[in-house]
Structures are given as structure tokens and as C-alpha cells.
Image (cartoon, rainbow, N blue to C red; front, side):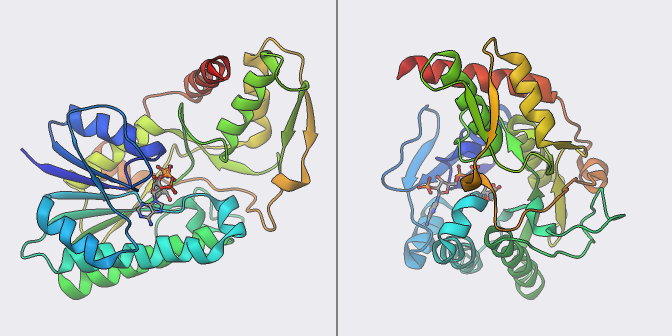
Length: 315
Ligand code: A2R
């Protein structure tokens, strides 16, 4: 039985990855920040701040995993504009702490570094869908930190013969995602309006941007497949392969609600720089693992809205 360690497992993706790895028959250990909690059972939970280098080394010596899924990050583009220093500390220095700790082990576990489709940044006409060989031109602080993580991962893989794989995950969505991300934000607002807890106006940012949305359950299935079948030193896009305009996402969510809702642009939600279209070429992932998307966008939007309807009722 393979032992899997999820670093930063208390977040949105962590819970879904735990469920996937249980299905795959792994023994599972998960780290979280001391103030966080992870519901569920059947896995070991450990506290870890990846900014504490010696603590990362100690934990890896103790757990001695076969697989390491490195999810810990400051994961919001919005917050990266507000707090670039913290984003760089966690996403770059934190990742280096993880890689150094793995390097110090007496054996070679496999590590999956989770990057982002945001790394491609300013995509030129004709570069869409975008493949892993394309130039990266990050357009925000979060993306720049994930480019750094990717480059450093490749350097460690080549220099030290470490089994490091990287993914560039495009937008992943689903129930339990924090409302700092667009789909969760729209669904929460719609649910609050339906419940009469907010005036009937959805506040939005740039509706013209196009992004590649995939259900988080399909995303973690890809991570698990890549961990087993991917090639060390390589980077793999993980996405649906089809960009959808944010306006279409909003229209679909509005069509799922019973309420009569107006739309208003909130300047707070507009980014200093926004990339017009990000769409993945997933052929490398598909040819390596046979992965394909199983959960349609419509189902994810419905389930995310239903999740927020439940949350709003609770409060
Ligand atoms: O920021 P918090 O307190 O929610 O904790 C997040 C945690 N984290 C850390 N863990 C250890 N040491 C740190 N210094 C540290 N700073 C933050 O990583 C959170 O529990 C977790 C990341 O979860 P989310 O923010 O929910 O990200 P998500 O959606 O699960 O994405 C996972 C990965 C990230 O690398 C993203 O950049 C990528 O997928 O798209």
C-alpha cells in the first residue's frame, strides 16, 4: 500500500484529494495549519507551517511517504495583489522548504507540485489552447510565484535526480470552495438573494474574461493519475480544454435561480491586470494517463449553488 502525504490539505482541494486517495487505496497523512481543522476520518492529521524549514524536515522524516502532494499555498490571485510578500513567502520559500526536506531524505519519494494555468499569463492570439511548451508571461503576483515553483522544481529534479512532477491546474470549482473565487462568489450571492438576505443585485468583476473551468473531483483524479504515471521533471496541464466566458457562467447560475436578479459591476472585484483568455491544451495529460473530464459544468454549477443554499440556511 502506498503512503501519500498531502501538504496543505485543509483547503478546498485537500478534502477532495483525501477522498480520491482513499478510493485509490492509499494510506494517507495530511498536514494543516495549526488553526485549521480537517473533517473526516481514516487519515492521519499533522500540523505544519511550510515556512518553518526544520519542521518540514522533521515531519517528512517521521511520515516517510511514497507520494507527496504539495497543495499548501496562498492560492488567491486577488489576495496576491493585496499581500504580495506573504504570497511569495508561502508559494516560493515554502515550496523550497518542502523540496529541501525531500532532498534530505535517504530515499526518493514522488512529489507533485501544484502550479496554475495563470502561469501562462498574457496569452497571444494563436496560442490557445495553450500547451506546456508555451512561453509563460505571468500577469499577477500569484502566477509569478507559481512560475518560480515550477522552475525550481525542474532544477531540483535535474540537479538532484528527484522525482518531481509539476502540474498547471486551470480553474477548478465545486462545493466548499471559498467565495474569493468567482463561481463560489456568484453562487453565494445568488443563494443569499434567494433567501432574502441581500438586495437582488449580484456584484461582479470582469465578465469578459474567459477561463477553463473543471470540477475539482476531476482535477484530483488527474493528480492521482499523474502521481502514478507521470514522468519526473515534466509539467502537465490539468483543465477541461474549453474556456468559458465568465458572463456565461453568471448567466447559467442566474438561470438556476428562481429569484429576479440584477447585475452590477463592483470596481473592487476588477483586477489591476486581467488576462483575457486562458484555455488548456490537455493532450499531454490525456496521452500520459487516459484522463478525461467526467463531471459537466452544469452539474458543478448546480451542486455549488445547492451547497451555498445550504450554507445560507445554516447561518
Ligand atoms: O491560508 P490558509 O490558512 O487557509 O491555509 C492554506 C494552506 N497554507 C499553508 N499551509 C502550510 N504552511 C503555510 N505557510 C501555509 N499558508 C497557507 O494551504 C490552505 O489550507 C492550503 C491551500 O488551500 P486553498 O487555499 O484552499 O487552496 P486550494 O484551492 O486547495 O488549492 C490547492 C493548490 C494550491 O497550490 C493552489 O495554488 C493550486 O492548487 O491551484
